[in-house]
Image (cartoon, rainbow, N blue to C red; front, side, top):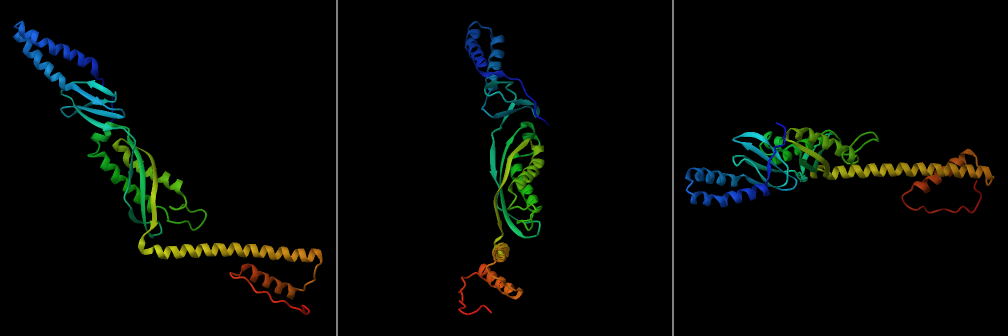
Length: 280
């Protein structure tokens, strides 16, 4: 059931009219117009219950004995049939932070994940009639979508082409927003933004995963150091040969390369040994 507008009367003019009619009722009874005064008094009394207030960014869902008549979004004091029942629905932008969920990622590693969702009601009729409680529906479906998103990606990236939860925040946020929106469309809710607010390995494997990350970082650093060292050794040999500083045979070149690599790649500072005699 989709929302449809309902026309109502402005409240201030109706208030003035009812005040005038109410003040005229004693005059009717003074004139002994009993048959006119009693129905008039009952009608005016019931009309006073037709007033209701619609605040900014709020919609009033109107029903008549269970039949949906329409939605009023005109803010201010309004008047409608006093037999109408009015249910106010907030159209303001709201946010919701999920609890920290413990799930398994794509590789089966247990992780903890949480999200923040920014949402608002865009169809008041669907929000009221499609689900029992649209706020509770938003909370439950958000956690369901978050679980699905967490199991679709690995926690960390192992190559340059894999989308992971930790490194591709924008892609994960777009996927999460799409998953939540698909679940909440039937409740008349629009998801404006969805982002991960908490992401960590589960405590039972956090230490092991930290060691793996440290090992990966050490390997990457070592690879960079070796790459730079080889480049520097190559440059040194080329410049020695180009400028004719010293002529080295293949054995001496190999020894020089070995010594330079030890100096450049070693974790500790080296202690040089000065050879006072011939290099041969």
